[in-house]
Length: 201
Image 1 (cartoon, rainbow, N blue to C red):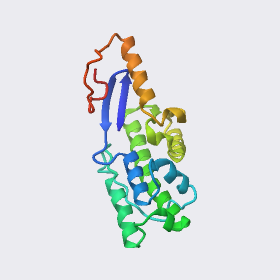
Image 2 (image 1 turned 90 degrees about the vertical axis):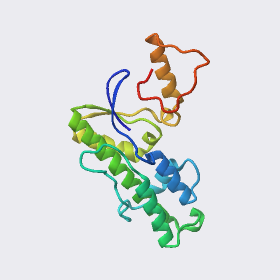
Image 3 (image 1 turned 135 degrees about the horizontal axis):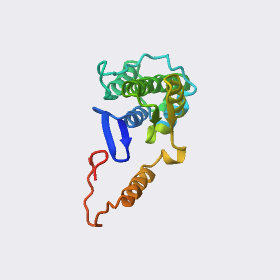
């Protein structure tokens, strides 16, 4: 998601995923490669050894003015790449060099889209403070690339410490505390709403 935050609990969604989120795509590609779950850390580790330009996986920008995301295409491209080369098998049977190149090229395709859309949105809205959060924000390559792009765009980037990127529990607890400070409470019998809108009470 790309979210414009004007104040606490005042949010405007600029873009969101149309299919697989970035983290899901990492997990699904890792499964195709026999790398286990969660996929993000192991793909990132192998990507450090590979060439991000080895394979030209697609980047889905979804039109010039779109801030939505779609990663199902790059995921499918990895699947076809593996099938066409007879590599659709556990990673243990694949040589480390080609495996690292696949991981590096896939990661680059995802990060290109995340960084480009974020910086474009910042420029269009005039935002100067950027935050990257959630599981994928633990990716060191994303942190480095976003940091460099933000600096070139004249923006300040804020990324949580790694220990707060692995589990949504800390974020949920903090939002709960903020709402409590505003006098917003609910009974213990309230129902969970999986798709509550951003900023919803």
